[in-house]
Length: 148
Image (cartoon, rainbow, N blue to C red; front, side):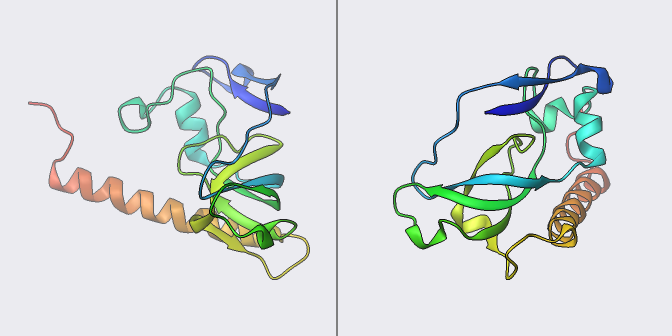
């Protein structure tokens, strides 16, 4: 499958299309054929090398967190009724700039629409952004992560 990878830390010029093996869902996971992925400001910061101590990203890696699309296969212990259903999900570990994305079924939300609306993915991503912003603010205000 095709993915967009960050080949080294830097500006947009470090993004490159690559072919890698198709992922397979493990136990409790589903495989989603992506029809839309989120592109967040955070992705640009990570691509430039910010937040390595929090996120652990090291090139080459596939960025992105939110994905909308259709479930094409399921792993062990997942109801096969998911197959063919439109979903919105987050990976919490990146990798959505890809044609196929593995996500945990418990963090996957069914859409009531045959096609995912852009606002559904946007709202899903915004909740995660708000959560991350709150987390970072609490860490900052509490003095966590500071080195003496």
